[in-house]
Image (cartoon, rainbow, N blue to C red; front, side, top):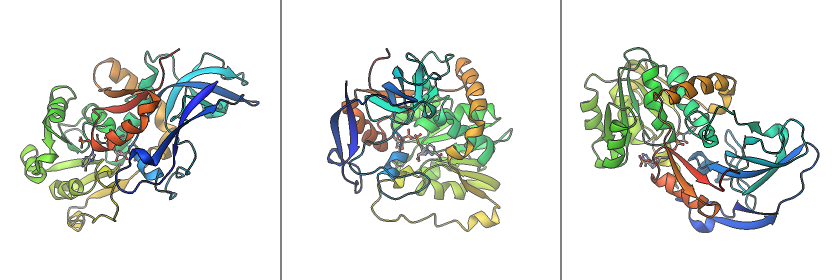
Length: 336
Ligand SMILES: NC(=O)c1ccc[n+]([C@@H]2O[C@H](COP(=O)([O-])OP(=O)(O)OC[C@H]3O[C@@H](n4cnc5c(N)ncnc54)[C@H](OP(=O)(O)O)[C@@H]3O)[C@@H](O)[C@H]2O)c1
């Protein structure tokens, strides 16, 4: 069997370009003892992968040059040398960016049969939605009556955040995204009370108009100007969950921090970064809860799907530019 796989061949400077990646075809090796072969069907592209292309270890190892990259993926087991994971099982693992993955059975997780669509495990009921839940339930806890602001609101984490904030008792949920069409979707389809088109260049004024008495909670997916404006709008004792800083991921020089950080002292603000992988013990509970919310129409499960392994790097680059609404996924092959 042959498998196409994407390698990182040069470290991007600024926005990644096609020449930073190479698609090669390899023979799929036989599984060793305790290993399985998975025919990948779905893979996730995440902004966090941009950091792994820099070649510096952060909370996770960088991608090596000349090696296939990693990504969350689901697929069907087509060969197995492990009793625990039989042929035909639908599994989740981290060896995306390739058509077939060969890996130890203890590094795959069987996708719960309760899911009609296995790709859901990469979106709202998976670690994507769990990231928003952690931010709003634990890191910057929403309380009944909270006014919540979410940046990157039309993205994977952001599209789940409104429903989660509402379940946690938020009174008002405000989202920011790029462009009027995304803002329409935020309000009409995703449960946001107000939407701000940050590309209009009036973020500070628009947030003040949406939350005239200030905000209690800010879920920061974007960093940069958004973080500065949010600090300015926070009410005393507010909490900020530092989830990501996608506005800076392609920057070639270090970016300035917020110029009003000192306001956090007088307002007694809490700003806390977090990484979802540190909280995996709570994931199964989230899965159960979130599955019910999705079923009851209380939690959005939006996806943007790009077809074909050949188009995977384009999906990744496009996501950093804002091509997606909801979770950006690549359909590598049709489910068996
Ligand atoms: N801490 C954790 O454990 C954890 C886990 C998962 C994700 N994250 C982080 O959470 C954030 C969102 O991730 P995601 O998977 O949900 O990605 P995403 O929001 O689906 O995709 C990225 C989005 O960023 C927006 N964007 C791009 N450049 C921007 C800019 N200059 N200013 C404002 N927005 C910009 C684009 O939307 P627009 O069209 O609206 O610009 C784009 O759709 C990222 O920072 C990611 O690294 C953190």
